[in-house]
Amino acid sequence: MIRCRSPPSLLLRMLSSCTSLPKPNPRLPLSTKPTSHNIQSSHLVTIPCKMSQTMSVSRCFTASTDPIRISSKPGLEPETGDPDPTSLVVVSFYKFADFPDYAGFRKPLKELCEELCVSGGIILAKEGINGSICGTREAVERVLAFIQSDDRLKGLRQIESPVSPEEEALHHGHTSSSPLAAGEDAPFRWDHVRVKLKKEIVSLGMPTVSPIVKVGKYVKPREWNALISDPDTVVIDVRNNYETRIGKFKGAVDPLTTAFREFPSWVDDQFKLDETDSKQSKLEIKDSNEIAKEEVETSKENMPKRIAMYCTGGIRCEKASSFLLSKGFKEVYHLEGGILKYLEEVPKTESLWEGECFVFDKRVSVEHGLAQGTFKLCYGCKQPVSDADMEAPEWEYGVTCPHCYSSKSLEEKERARARQRQFKTWGIIGGPDKGRRPASSTPDDNEKRNDTPLSRSV
Image (tube, rainbow, N blue to C red):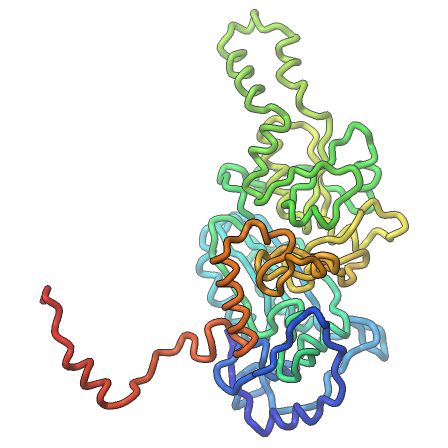
């Protein structure tokens, strides 16, 4: 995490230069007491990242107060219409690969992201890489090029989402809350990247299921409508219930899972695969001459002729399709690039998508054309909430919403209120001295510590 204190002169110049601010959201509390101590990045002055050898504050800061150039169309140069290398982009990517030495990739990747001011989250595992990052187009392209410099990770599956001028301004620090804030509505925390080491890049809990070995058939977004409109096709949404609640494809089956790990058991229950496996094992014990044709047909009668699956970006479908194939399903298809690619390529007038698509960053949800959606996030349960939810009596900012109010105990609610008070007062949970060792107050305190009797075990 990159933290720094901006020089007082820089703060004054930035404050004086902020002559107009967006209208604040009345539902969201404002941070009213920023301090000069160790404040969370969301309350620091932020300015465009420019690499310089003479920077005295941080390698991601410069004393320049030049206004941020924002093109009239996100990601394009205002004069030529070409991609603007200094505009912000959000790119989600993944690749299944045989990657046993993944741990050694973490340090150089994280250091490069920090150097280039690229934020977001990346997961590394022996089965590949999965991530979503935000930064200038030039910086993000350098990070992706570095990842693909390893031959095993070439051919990343990527989905790029545009960043609006409003989001870009928020990302660089001009917010409705405070001219010192980095913007809680920015796609990612602008100064922070997490590179985690895990057992799986998407957790199914079944190590034997590998999309590298076998995977379903990819379907292009433009061909998706025809496939799911076929009455012989069973369409399955493999996302979790808090995602499906705000949008899904017309006629899709919702497994109502709370985690991806629940998907295999749902499949077994839905298609009675436990019974099928039991019958199949009994058939294998019998002499082949005794196997009746109708028994064989019975073992397959619960399997649909064709299955089409989809998820946010495509990664969960790869594992889910591999799992179904291992269970004996024959025709398994999945949407290439996921919902995001579909919303990007298919016009709203032709779309079979209903609602909005939940995304795992501070945008919360997106609509057709990957435009910013209308949902916000409940910081008590991390679920999407609508304007109507925020008008409900169960809504308390940073504490509860109608979807988690009844499931939280009084103790949990009070802890959430305490966290919210800390953040509102100091701009950081835990206070401005979080993570610091307490300094000795007086020489007398040191003498008292030195006079403490030794442990009896010595």
